[in-house]
Amino acid sequence: MDEKPTRRVALKVLGATLGAAAFERALSPLRELSEITSVGDFMQKHYRELSRDEMNAVLRRLEDETQQRYGREVTIRDVRPTEGVQFAYALNLSVCIGCRRCVDACHVENNHDRPTHQSYIRVLEMTSGSMDMEQGNTGYDHTVPAEGKFYMPVQCQQCENPPCTKVCPVEATWQEPDGIVVVDYNWCIGCRYCEAACPYHARRFNWHKPEIPAAEINPDQSYLSNRIRPQGVVEKCTFCLHRTREGRLPACLEACPTGARVFGNVLDPNSDIRWVLENKRVFVLKEELGTRPRFFYFFDV
Image (cartoon, rainbow, N blue to C red; front, side, top):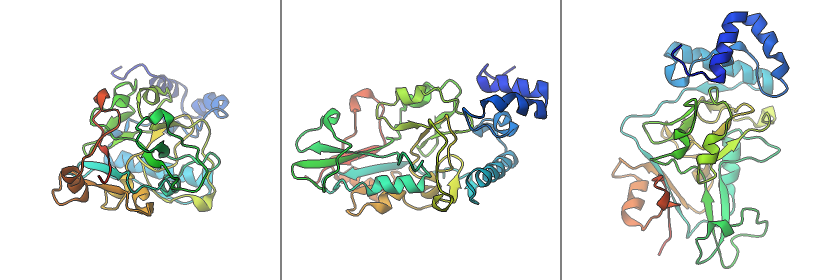
């Protein structure tokens, strides 16, 4: 066999040996532990190996499964990167007020679990004049902005040299040509190595099946971004690729009331992000690690 001896390969062999019906019965004891619904979930190829017809079949299957599990009709697309585009993000810490509207927008746009109010964004309340992130407070519950404080939202940095992709034993996560680091959620085995490798606490593990009322589900979904992720996988921010690859802005940016967020294609000399990088004194988090983030911060000074 050419494939690596992973759990998925073993299950494929088991499925081929037993046949579809027997395979389903063999998997039934695991149903309380994970979202196993069909042989197709395990027999599916890696995202980068799928032909266009195979990808379309997967998308239709996932749409049907979402309808069955959550009672909502959705459209799941495979939105590919555009040639000549390299995305980057910048955040003006001088005008961020810590309102967390970006957190809420991410929560809704990306179909996160409602009881835990999960989001890909954390906002640190920092003491003015300090950059000690270990002293940052994410649980503040007072009126903002508070005197003597500034606010630092942190999310996936979409590193040019991402440590998370290097540790995945089944190559379920990788960097796309436009710089976005993605996850094939149907291929992820939930080992959480990538979560441990990320120095920005940007990855989330789905301990439970996400709970989302049908009426609150965002039906505009993409395979590699905001479709509802199954239990037992690691997920992350994708710069809202289902929006940004089609010329729209990330949901967190649109929700910001102060204009603190700047996003765009750094290869476009007329883009807002290019202007920021050329005219502001920007910095990145944990520069000493050599991850080369595509998420920049700056102050109006």
